[in-house]
Image (cartoon, rainbow, N blue to C red; front, side):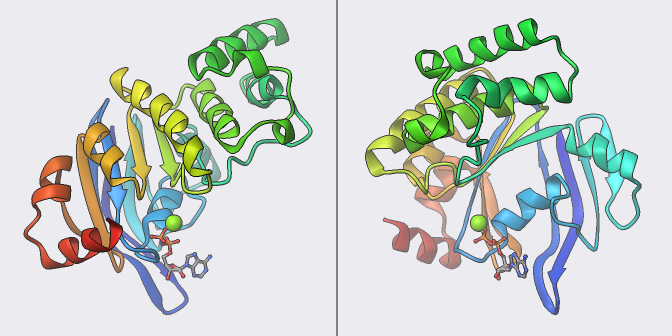
Length: 243
Ligand code: ADP
Ligand code: MG
């Protein structure tokens, strides 16, 4: 579903992604872990060209492009393959939960309003937020806002959802409800790439874990293997700090 070949990204002189290659299968759930500053967010942002890599080939679904030379049409096509869920929910503050979802369906997908509303309500149902459909973000908890963000990401029927630390801005008692929604998506074989510090969650839900440090993939493998049984000293040192 996703294939990245020799992706390179620099900020000024600093190499942030150093020749990253990876593949992610359809329906696979991959957790990306690693120290702060290792390039995890940049990698996700390069996948939808929110950041422009210097070189490398990205293929998602049936769209492939060479990041060294692409046109606006290819960029648009690649971006349409994924949806992103951010740490800070990033809902439109002046729109209700439902409107946050239907906006893109009506404006971008040109869906009729009644149908968009119906789709929106189904998605809110799926994340347990139907009762709050007509509330504004400011009246919702962080966990509730994040569940609406996930529903919004699902609305465009992406080939894969990219999560960047979806629970790290939440109050501890709100983390569980968001992880629960992600878990159910995983069970439905949604392709997901999840940058996370939740090691227990990664172990339970991810098919595979990629450990990054300093712009490199240090190691990857089955979640349990990497998180519980890695014999790589860099991985072990990181994991010891996490627990
Ligand atoms: P992570 O998500 O793993 O914490 P990031 O991808 O956010 O890491 O950052 C990787 C490195 O790139 C860090 O050294 C960070 O300071 C740097 N960086 C990230 N975004 C920018 C930017 N827009 N401009 C300059 N440097 C950046
Ligand atoms: Mg980050």
